[in-house]
Image (cartoon, rainbow, N blue to C red; front, top):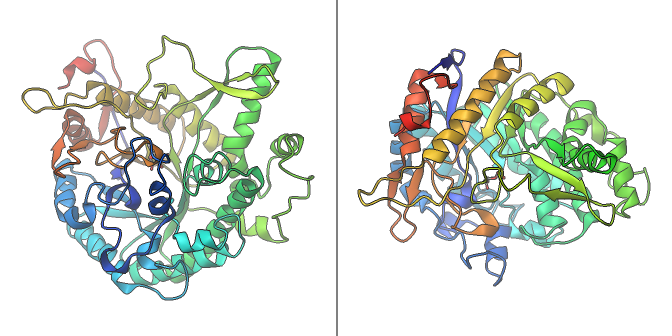
Length: 463
Ligand code: FCB
């Protein structure tokens, strides 16, 4: 075994999001979110479930904090539920909603755990969707107002602020493909949504920094390296297309103050844009979007392999039957994390990088002794951390790693069938059981090092 140490002060964390774990949708005057509404429509969630109880974290958060202490994490990435704070999306602030997070933050600080706060992890107040949602420009002010009020209340205690989690998912899955709330299917709306997410990021980041001068403010993107299925010109172009649509559509405005021309041309060719004058873009927007980030969060799960479809349009394809996949159907491809971290470092030069999510869904069942021997999760995390370490050695400014997720939880359109947690949750009783990966992660955190393999090391060491 060869142990590679991470730098001193490296932040080891776990991540969750409000809608996926909290439950208690009406407690303390919370308003309805788009995910509450969307999951009430039969057929929208694979297993017919909803997030109304989820992990019952709203009531059990002290217990969850205890589990985090046991893991020895240095940081907790969580999100604020926007409809708890603004039940109608705008207007009256609901102090009771903020009380909950204030208590949570105080509990974390008492435990020596750094709160790493996300403002928007997808649970838009339904009332704002009723006014047009992310495609409507008025949402930029609503979001900035929400961010400012949370910053005023928690800014004396929270240093790390993330505006949005994965704007691509919100815009594309929510407004173009319709498989996420609010279930819209309009490419034009999706492009406007993406722009308003970026603009509200820039505007609210400035506002948070004004209110909390010592704050570190960033955004979290889900990034996936695009691989052509073959060296054919068509497949290579399909990969270029995907990279523009998925990665550069967000990276370029944030770091370069422009949308990528080739990806604009792709959208025009598909009839999603009338021309190079983007209809949603106003003067000054790109300057606001480009305002310097203190850090970029990267969520990494897998690569995407692309091929030119029979109609000439790019298609995501499976990478080959021999490749290992998880319960989401995602290929296990650790090297992609190294590639992405280095590419972002070299091409965009962020001041700091955090791996804000990384993890894998497995069909974790307890054995006869009640143990969940999730050896594949351990190997997934180990191999990805090894690649993160390699990227750090090559110069990428990586400051932390957050495992997705602390708990098995409500996995959006899939419901409860996809288990990503370090702790298993029995959704009938709410009981939490640490999996073997929790034990492994605790040891890794304590060592501040990862085993990158070598003669005597293999996943057999664990458990
Ligand atoms: C990411 C989301 C997170 C979770 C993981 C599996 O896209 O940010 O909430 O669903 O995927």
